[in-house]
Amino acid sequence: MVRLSVPCWLALPALVLARDSFDPLAYVDPLIGASNGGNVFPGASLPYGMAKAVADTNSGSRQGGFTLDGSPVTGFSTMHDSGTGGSPSLGNFALFAYTNCPDGDINRCVFPKEGRSAFGHFSNSTVSAKPGTFGITLHTGIRAEMTTTHHTSLFSFTFPSVGGDGEPAKPLILQDLTDLADSRQDNASVSVDSKTGRITGSARFLPSFGTGSYVLHFCTDFSGADIVDSGIFVNSRASTDVHDLTISRSINGYPLPGGAFVRFNSGAEPILVRTATSFISPQRACEHAEDEIPEFDFTTVSEAAAEAWRAKMSPIRVSTHGVDGSMVTNFYSGIYRTMINPQNYTGENPLWSSSEPYFDSFYW
Ligand SMILES: *[C@@H]1O[C@H](CO)[C@@H](O)[C@H](O)[C@H]1NC(C)=O
Ligand SMILES: *[C@@H]1O[C@H](CO)[C@@H](O)[C@H](O)[C@H]1NC(C)=O
Ligand SMILES: *[C@@H]1O[C@H](CO)[C@@H](O)[C@H](O)[C@H]1NC(C)=O
Image (cartoon, rainbow, N blue to C red; front, side):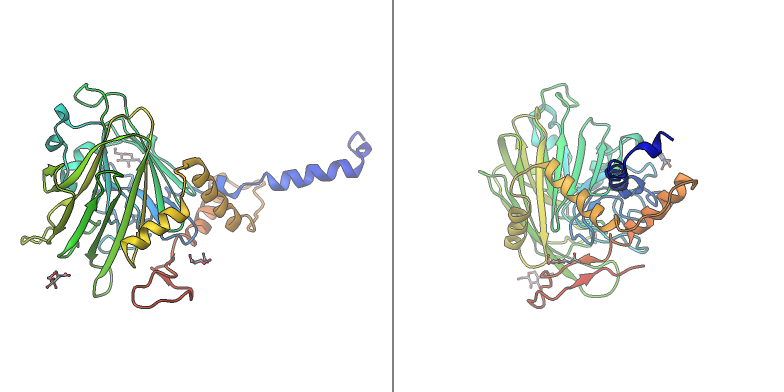
């Protein structure tokens, strides 16, 4: 009786509100399939995005970068495939971070990917994965959050106030020339600008499926702390006097570790790392980064990424009444995955110049 007395023009806005408060993203769990050999990509991406940021582990099923099987993190990279078997795909130009180098000596930071795994352990409970963002805290106390635009990833590293040696934070962030499959070929190159810290580079890699090879370029910028110094590393040796490197694959089959690093005067504020890739040139990668993320505003970028997913998924509404929650989560997480791949590489084919839609990585 009371309900009937409410004029219908009052009830209507309430109905609209109820409809709009339905958020399909609440039912997406990107971590489904990140353990037991699911090989999925559980990180941050836009629908069909080329940039796909996640923490990479050294697991045997790291095909999509990250796994929840107890394997440690070896880096944070921005290109991934999802759901492939076989040899891992992409995972190029990984970043890694240290709160400081013991005794302030850069040569006492561990640069090669294999050795970094000792600093990459984490608890599963620190992992957060939502459409458009991914975060993890390593046992070193470093928290890494990441989000993306179409070609660009934005990482936010938060450091503990002191490093493992008890000295105040003087963070070092490195970027290497590896990929997940260690397929790098000869003549990879990297440069770091001693004034701005901008790191640019290029390398030729092998695809996980098919023949031939591909060249990928990148451009990385930093924000959030003043730069102390920067330089180049090769294997476990680093130098602040060298700022450009061209490196061969090496003779023993495993690519010689190499890359660049930047060191900062403070870890009091999060350090933001913006990295974009391009199949065309390092300059094009820098243009993508500057166009897509002109300010290093993590909240704005991650909210836009979530909104892009919401726009794609909201047209699909199911009744959740009386349905087991895990069923609804499986449903929306499955829909979400149909838009992780294929990747939209429009304008990024080095073999021709065209604005015709061009998509790659059509898996299953
Ligand atoms: C959490 O981590 C442990 C190892 O540290 C792993 O064996 C386990 O499978 C993980 N849990 C989940 C739910 O993936
Ligand atoms: C590396 O550079 C040398 C000299 O320019 C060239 O002969 C060789 O083909 C290059 N290799 C690759 C994989 O690009
Ligand atoms: C693919 O990328 C191009 C260029 O960035 C963009 O114009 C287009 O809207 C994208 N298509 C889809 C389906 O996302």
